[in-house]
Length: 408
Image: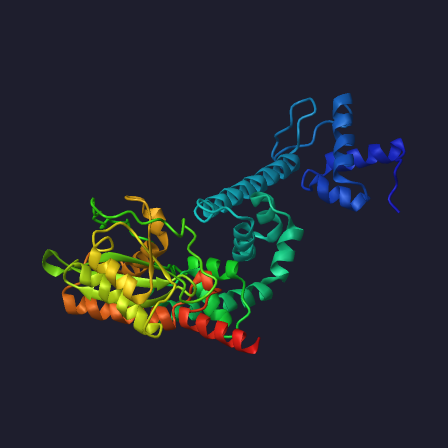
């Protein structure tokens, strides 16, 4: 057992041994005597301060050099201090290297998981303890994060698979679907997925639906038109089919600075495009043809239905009024210059041009424009999911409603 209290004789002999053996270090003598190095050094310094036993040579045996009087550190003390200083310098240099390497990955998004990943990537070189201290993260937190590596890998792989499915749906629909419609398509395919997760994965993989382009006003009001009341009052809903319709004219830009014009008739119940017409003019027959096409889709007549439009000259003409009377349609019009009064029809036209042009300013020619519009309209009615219909297409919505009505 190591002694805690040493007699004076032991201390004097220990000091004499140190001073008489300049070829040995205090550390080695202390180890032989069974005392600590610092304790023995204190005894030697105290004896030297009292002028007892002389001075220990600083340069080893036979050097002839003596330490000056007073409590001056010996060589082994200086060597030990130098050793500690060099170790501290190495430690500071390593910390500097760690911070230099961490500066770039943490510059933009310094998240906690980024720091944990940095510790994992460099632990073989610097050690976990030092890295966690320099980066100011807890070791326990790092090990918890490390333990969940397998689960994170599984989630990452699942996100990659989801991104592939979302991209496939996005491509199938000409790059027009955003996250809500992609989510609906995935669920329709039997996949249980949260819409927030789909939105995140699409954003991380750069899968983006088309956005609305700036609107261009094309309505030319008829100043002498007889007044027609607004029967919808911006309520663009219907409780039954074939009761409320909206329509509008939109331009289709083609090469050479020319235009085609599209007239539409949309059933507000199912959002189905039941009638439409394309021409290279904006005469009244354009809107008449579209309304007659809607009547054919609904069985020949539109008895009791309300058709709502803006105050364009075509919708205010006598010819269009006669057509409405013949088909059993009640006319409705919004205020002049107020696009919100016919927002449902304008929204339909905006979606059509946004998803067919896809950022282009025009179609190369009239034939290409006609085919693109025809394809989109067909897909709109049969395939394209509509947010107001519970992400069903208009025709699927009508079939579902018919089935429920038959069952009742």
